[in-house]
Length: 419
Ligand SMILES: Cc1cc2nc3c(=O)[nH]c(=O)nc-3n(C[C@H](O)[C@H](O)[C@H](O)COP(=O)(O)OP(=O)(O)OC[C@H]3O[C@@H](n4cnc5c(N)ncnc54)[C@H](O)[C@@H]3O)c2cc1C
Ligand code: FES
Image (cartoon, rainbow, N blue to C red; front, side, top):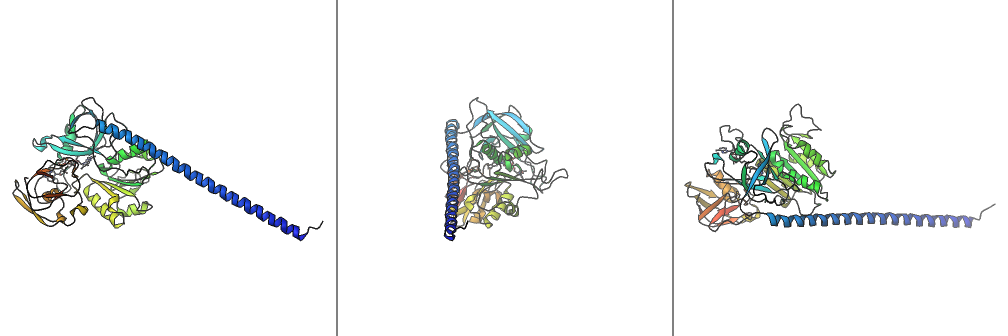
């Protein structure tokens, strides 16, 4: 049987039309599935955000209701030896009341009375290192501060030595309610890079624990630097928390690993955390960066991140050592002034490069008390006998009239301070 050429053409055309129709139907179906999937993901994210906001709202209410003003007595309910230099202290309310929820990244400010302070109170801040969802007790973790490198004859740290030598289960401490500004971005899915060195890992442990509890999975890149396996804090806890979600990436760097420390198992990088490591392991610089550790590390990494193009407002720091608040734009237009420290009999020349009044005093050999160094605890309060100051960061609580907070103040005129 012969088939007419026209019929063949007709069949071919029909086949093409059917094939094209099926193809475009398939493409439309695929598109619809993708849109549906996107919508569902968007809805899930929205629901998770709403749930997180609701939990947050509830916690904020509890926090406001239970927060205390001034200091409160806290009892040490447990002491945990973390390693040869670091101890954790679990603290419950001495009055039997409830503790307010805290935000990961906040700290407690203690008023302490160590003998080494010569009868004067010392104000010291310690980050809350425990799970913010565990409100039976707070946890702070304290490293014994030895003399600075190269100064073996210098006295050891007063507050941390007192904690390690004198504070035991049952000791009563005085502390202000949790506070601080070292907080994660409000958007629950904004990705972050956390960089902690030594005991500077404490606020990040609270952030990790809070994240593991939350419904929303924020992308976390946690870089932790310490000396070696002996100094590595909470190794198992850190690995367990990091394993709760594939969007947590943990990189541990040992600066001086011991022969028994296993590369690739106990730590991923030999050496310190520096910009080159971050550039090698991060997909981009488009993150909020959180730095916590010694002042030298913070200064070096902040400069590196700025040079890499990270905007200053996306770099957040919590210095545990004597770092000063950067002057930033608040000091624009500031000019040189003289600052007289009346009781010490010293007059120092100030210019913007000298930093805050606290930094000026320390560099000039005038001993001032300090605690948080970010305007929260009030330890650096000084009476101003004459002249005006300007603040480079808003004080957590304004000092009484006639006083200034030296850690966040710069001169706005020649000054006379009672110090
Ligand atoms: C917000 C915030 C959170 C913090 N969180 C933590 C935390 O979680 N864990 C933690 O361990 N720390 C933390 N810190 C640091 C903590 O507050 C203290 O600064 C730290 O414990 C040292 O205090 P100290 O009284 O023991 O030492 P200080 O007495 O203040 O001495 C500090 C250093 O100076 C040296 N020194 C003292 N006198 C002399 C001298 N005459 N000559 C030369 N050197 C001298 C000491 O040897 C010591 O090394 C935090 C700090 C802040 C601001
Ligand atoms: S040191 Fe805490 S307010 Fe200045």
